[in-house]
Image 1 (cartoon, one colour):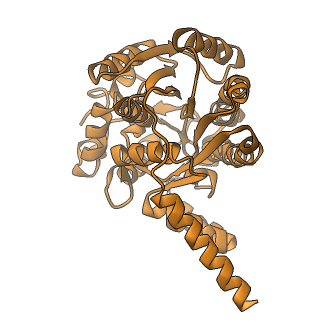
Image 2 (cartoon, helix red, strand yellow):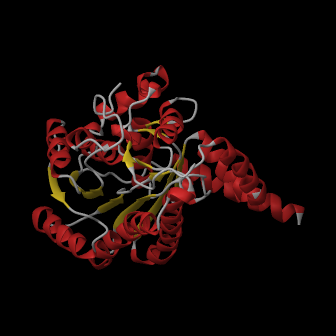
Length: 353
C-alpha cells in the first residue's frame, strides 16, 4: 500500500507540474462573454481578455455602469459589446446571447461572474434574500451556461469559467444566502467539467478568497449595517487577507487559457479549503468561534443598506484606503453614488472617504 500511495502521489505531482508548465492555447481572435462585466472583477477580467486580443461582450443590470465600462475597454483597444441583462432571468439571458452571436458570430468563452452578496446575521436575512442570492449566483450561472452550450457542442470546442467563492466551499458566518448560492455553483461547475469534457468544452471552477476589487461598496449590509460594513471592508481591503484584484484577474485568465479544472485564489482560501477538506468539523467549530466576534442582530431592521451609503470612522480609515482606491479604479462607485440615500443612514460623500 505504501508503494501504491507513493506512486499515486508521484503521479499527481507530475500531473500538476505538467499543467503548470504547459503554455496553454492562444486566446487572440476569440470571443468572450463576461457576465457582471461592468465593474469589479468582471471588468478586470474583461480588461485582461482584451489584452490577450479577445473580443469581449459584457453584461450587467446598470446601463450607466455598462457605458463607463465599455468606454474603458475601448480605450484599451478592445472590440466591445455592452448589453443590459439580468442573468436571473432565463429569457433575458437567451436574448442577450442571441445579440452577442449576431454581433460577433459566436461565443468561444463564457465567464460566469455576475453575483450578489448580502452581509449580516441569519436573523436579519429573509427568505427573499436566499431566493435572490440563489437566483443570481446559481441560476444566473446555469442560465448562461445552458444558453451557450448548444453552439459550443456543435463546434466541439469552448471554454466556461465559473467564478464561485471560498464561501461556496466553506460556509462563512454572516454570508449565508451568498454561500448557499455559491455552494450550488461549485457543484454545478465541477459536474459540468466532467460531463462536458467529451464535447471538447473545458470548465474551470474559480474559487477566490477576498480580493481588493472595491466590491464592499456594492454589497448589501443587514442587521447592524455599519458594524457589518466595518469588518467586511477591512478584511476586503488589506493585503494580509485580500489578494490584488488585478493579480487575481490575470491568474483566472491564465487558468481559462490552460483549461485548468480549478483555480484557487489567495493564501487564506488555499489554507481554508485544505483544512476544511481534512477536518470539516474542526473548521465549522472554528467558524462558530469567529461568529461570536461578529455583530449580533440586536433586533435591527432586516432592510438592506448598500455599503457605499454607509459612512463611519472606518470609511475614513487607512484600513480601507486600498479598498476605496480599487473601487474607483474598477467602476464600483458609479452606481452607488447615483442612487438615492437610504433612509436612516448617513449618506455622507456617497461612500467615499
